[in-house]
Length: 153
Image (tube, rainbow, N blue to C red; front, side):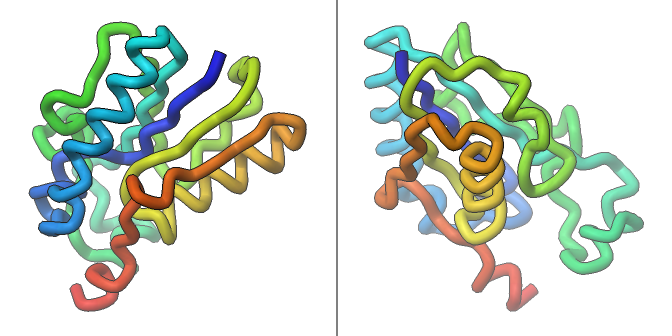
């Protein structure tokens, strides 16, 4: 069985507080990728960047003063049309989720999603560090970095 990890395909990163036309443009192809995995009944995991109302008071919020992905808001939700009924959802309060080792991966992991230069790369590295025997790949057509835009905020 393969696993697809969809990193932070949330409204705030697509068309919300930190959204871009480029992020909006990859959504249909991410949806197609999810449908491929769904058709094979492979594992699908969504990560959600998860912050709280006090975000601007946190260390990250002081360095990136744009309130985003506040839990239980529309911006925190996965983009419409991407979710699958049996998908697993991981709320991560930082760039990379530290609990990857607790999951059981049988075979290959493929990663797609947003904030390539921060969140995608952090999670790919954490996965590889914790499971060096598992093949991990990133679909370069279905990722998008946000750092240049963030630097302009």
